[in-house]
Amino acid sequence: MRSWIFFVIPIWILGAPQGANGVENVKVKQELSLPSEAGGWKWDGKEKIYNPRTIFDYIDGAGELYRSFNFQSLIVRRFVRPGQPSIFAELYDMGSSEDAYGVFSFERQDEDAGVGQGSEYGGGLLRFWKGKYFVSVYPEEELAEAKSTVLHLGQAIASSIKSSGPAPQLLTYLPGAQVGLREKSIRYFHNHVCLNQRFFVANENILHLGKKTEGVIAQYLRGQSKSHLLMIRYPTAKQAEVGFESFRKNYMPEAKGKGVWQTEDRKWTAAKLQRKLVIVVFAASSEADAGELMKAAEEKLREK
Image (cartoon, rainbow, N blue to C red; front, side, top):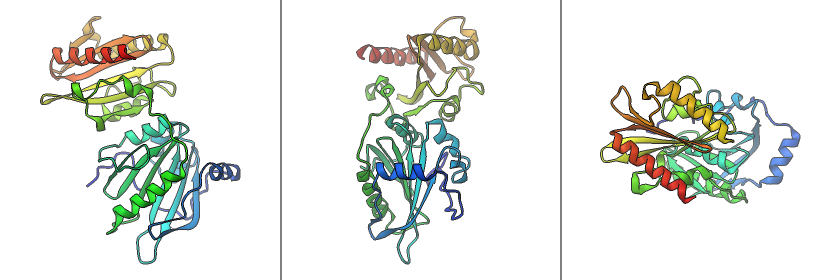
């Protein structure tokens, strides 16, 4: 059974506000030519469009996640076939390919489905990103032929998105599988709320994260132990220094200026400032492991 954290399947609300005005409708239709039929399922002719203000009319609690990634608009279409459950397609314009990837990364756990620039299929749900769009396709209820139908529709939508785009550059700074990177654990984000969803740091925003900061966190498996590597890139070196000093003061005050120390759970944390970057290793099983992962991160940076 799939574990849902942010992406709760919404109920189709026929009376929900349209969200976007006519100008936005025209813009969407100029950029895309969405499929009206796939695998025997046909679009019912209705289209819901939501913007950053009205997204909560469609997905109440999960709206903040999308807004944290610079969400621009959402198109929702329902596809129907006599005697079969409806299939829904949600197309989120995230403004940039980096943020489309970010939303996709946040609940990633299944195998790639070969759709768009990155995808996964599990529990009847297809999720993928391509260009500045993040897309979800899923049946209203259990469907015997769900996978082939959902994938067919997803491929058709991906084909309608003509432009691709890069994943966040920050991902290229991560050391790879040779030091135990778990690929599906990579999460890209901007704010401290999203960071805490993956590794709790503090209730307060002690790293001074915001819309203009970029963060990536990933899990590394070293022997039988798991540690996390966090990288934050700030707009300026001064902002990075402020974030780093705040982190040291609030998270590791007993370290007394050292770059590594043992926490109460007997795990090890290491932290370094590299120009515009703050790098932190969390939950290493030993001081040596923390140092080795930090060293691997620094060596990767020197390659850039």
